[in-house]
Length: 311
Image 1 (cartoon, rainbow, N blue to C red):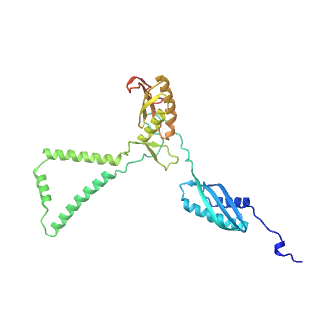
Image 2: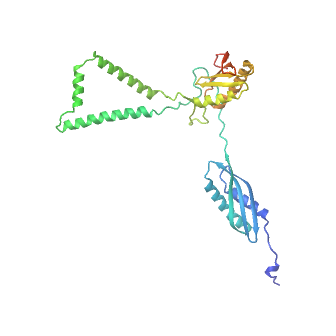
Image 3: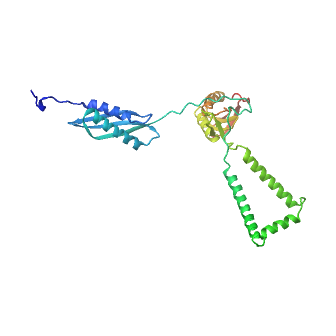
């Protein structure tokens, strides 16, 4: 006996199941660090419409990632449910930033120690190199043109004969020759310093997570961070901070409260903030506080110890 098709029963896929399938299919196409926030599905007859909200890692091409997720959700949902999916929506609801790897804390070394191994970051010296190359190229070019002209029967250039005559008429005791020699020596010493010294004195070396990685922090940025931390201490209304390789100097103005208590709190806060900068050699902290009245005048000073190991 054959049962008519209309009497064999029907198979219904619930919208909840379609939503779960769409969410799982979208998760399969997410880049590393992404996640599905929520999804929705509506079923009408033999077709379904799905929508998925996702969180993508930053930085990422949102349009390309959304296209891959939409195509994956459409094909997988249609294949697993037997429904046609004429429309699928993907909404990028949030972006997530991966946490940076932890930086090992820098331990203060003895005076004169640079802390850690590895060379410093060296300045590129582009301007001195460009000036030296331009002057050398111009001088060699002029001399080469004159030598070629003389070689083909022409007369020497006037500037070359004038230089030769001037040098022949003056000896080492001449004032002009001495001045020119001193100038040449100074320029040579400057060029030698550019070649040998690393430069970038306004940058502080940072502790790197790997030997092949080199990083530096500008002194102004470090001073700005410490100044913001100092101004956050109750009682501090003014703050001036300077950071160098071996020492961080803080001058704080106290508007209210006992200066010795405010100074102790500044020392505690900044002492905990210095290792957070990630420097290879943590500078010693020196804090000076002054009483500041409402008119802006300063009265009295409290200074800290001068040893390099504590504030």
